[in-house]
Image (cartoon, rainbow, N blue to C red; front, side):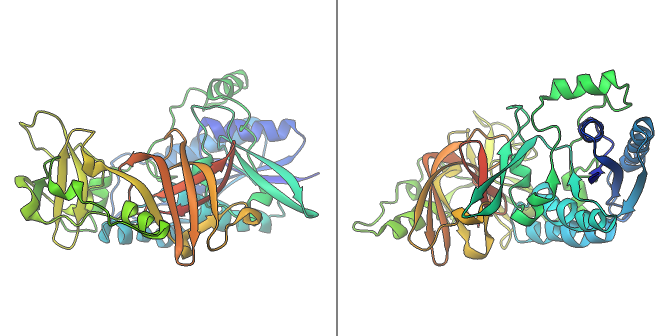
Length: 395
């Protein structure tokens, strides 16, 4: 009998995942990850992990499976929280959920599970796994969840073949309403529970307050750049090579305060991310102001008016070679190769037509349609059909 350790988060998805595995004849063990106990960074007054671990325990009792809590807060702090602060300090916007899956759930947690004699680790992600044979070798495929509204393959875009080989996603072929229905039939305490938001497994985090604990507020200027600014009509040189054209298209504009007008003040450029419109507190503009760039060195925020402002759009992005990751290692491109894919630059964004261009120093991803708010530090993930084949960090 195969043994599976399920990461029970105290939510409905992982509860139903555990139940389904039990139905399929696996020996199931429930494990709750405690990833936080740093009171110096208060998150909010309520303590969600206590409530969550209690719900996870109730579910385990209901299903009659062994349950324990593992404290991974050390690893979480070192691998996720410190990474987040470092990224924010550099003026990048990290994606802790993607990292948490790569570094915590399918690494630290998986090692604990395997040490308990598990054959697999299961989570309540909405995605599917299948396998094919390539040159006599088993290759694992990471595929979109059946529920189009809930496909979470994006969050697993950094997994390796090794990690996938040991992963199970029992609810991947169900829709969210079906999952809730099963939970209700089983009278699981989590059946009606709202979906968790915020950092993976930390619970309720309000980011600015979270960051303020570590990154000191410092006042800076908010500059508004006019959409007709000459910087947007820069002609690209003639006779460029494809690589030079891609570099031109993916390049960030280097804004300076002289290019625009001061419209307000902010409390720290590292609290803001490209594409953001809330929290600027600048009134009196005909349309909303959007962040088009931040400069943490000069502590300046550049904004543009309206969601169609040219400063929000770019048609290409670059990934440093060390950050290019193939889930399907057998499909990896070599220097000079291209591949047509469907890609997204954030969770839940509809897939976009794109071309990958592999060079020695890294990979360019060029889009058929210019993309709004391409954000450094976030992940771009690319698909062939419903299969997620690779991803990388936007540089």
